[in-house]
Amino acid sequence: MVTIRKAVDADRPGVWQIIEPVLAGGDTYVFEPGSSEQEMLDYWFSPEKHVHVAEDGGAILGTYWLKPNQPGLGDHVCNAAYMVSPAAQGRGIGRLMAEHSLDEARRLGFTAMQFNFVVASNTAAVCLWQSIGMEIIGTIPDAFRHLQLGPTDAYIMHRKL
Image (cartoon, rainbow, N blue to C red; front, side, top):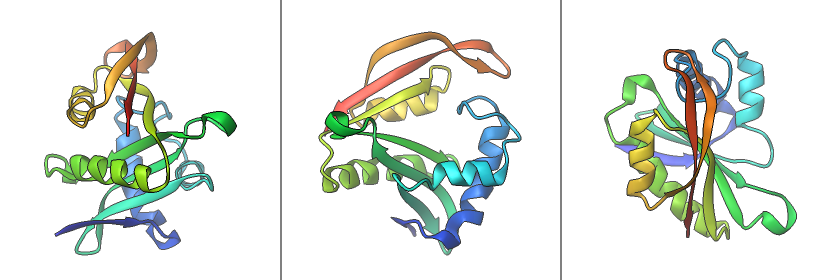
């Protein structure tokens, strides 16, 4: 059974086992394929983030984080990022984490969620985010250099909590 919990330092190697192949695809995240483990784990686990993992039988299948999208007077809107292990795709892990993150964002006092950069060709993610109430509120033309498709639009997505 899949459970979602707050990540701890001991989860870092398991999270890296998700980040590395996701970045290698060059189709969903702006980080260069081949980015270093240290760089990416420092980014993913930076102090301002609330990091969670989805696990089943001790195996980490997915991870997400929440953080304020802006400091100060904009800190009531959160930003989030999600990754699912390629081996666990199609099992509903992304949806479980999305729903969990909405509850967690509310619990933390956020009043809205905003995704600043969703690659438009990542249709599975776009459909998932729309299914949990996120709306596309803007398009950034050719914002992403997709490794297979070339210049690709990115969406800004938002929803109130």
